Length: 251
Length: 124
Image (cartoon, rainbow over all chains, first blue to last red; front, side, top):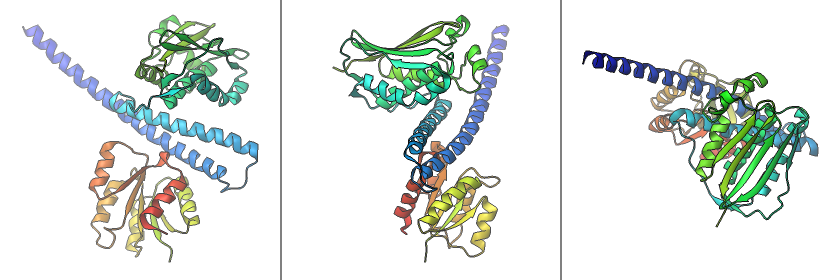
């Protein structure tokens, strides 16, 4: 009986310590996110001033590139808000607008944004032309665009120079399956089970790139699950990784 | 006479960008980086047509500034726009309880949109 009471007291103490640690980490994340937002605000405003011609006139090409980084900045601001929400209540924003959409067109559009980075990393990215008719899917395009960006960004960041990223789409029963195949550094056996956890970054990823919160894949999985689909991957260290995700076909 | 805006923002770069924009839209902009500078302007006779307030400030925060503004007869009814990168519901509610009708998250708006909101609130 005495042992049970001691156990209970110990548990209660550990629970209290855990809660305090969680609160402390939430504060750290909150403070850092606020700083991030402040810097992103400055970047966004100046880029908009450039686009609007408030500080001189850009050439057509210059405007094109400034527009791209303005769009990227907006996406970073969106992601940062997502981090704040995940930090606050463990949930990601749950407002989804599902509409019938052409996912092949969405992939093509998303890939346009990556042409510069692909060149920089010397990695060839292509969407393999489907051999069969691809039906429309039921999706929140903005959210699925985030999924595609996360997967392609990871594949680029952890890819190898001279390598490739190939995206395919095919119907699989009531779902459409998208594959993102890369020839990058792969994921170790040790890290595979944790890859979708919040804030997790694989050891070999940490050594390759200084940046990366690890939140991208966590959010990616959440978005796919909100669509009623699933996401999984295969990987071989030093050889590459294939991410698969499914989305329901529109009826 | 141009409408007058008092902007309280501790980030001097952001304050400069916002001031530049609002001045180009025809407003007279007075800037402060903290509560001391803000109240020095008010004590010196400034009665703005609008307060543009950040919340996270060094020393005395934006909420305390709001309380002080509410206690001053000559400025308590001046419209206030909170312009902050804080976005938690508790912060928004706290600001609303202190008489704020507009709460804008800086990162979500361009300077054009800020200017439009100000024009909607106080005209030009």
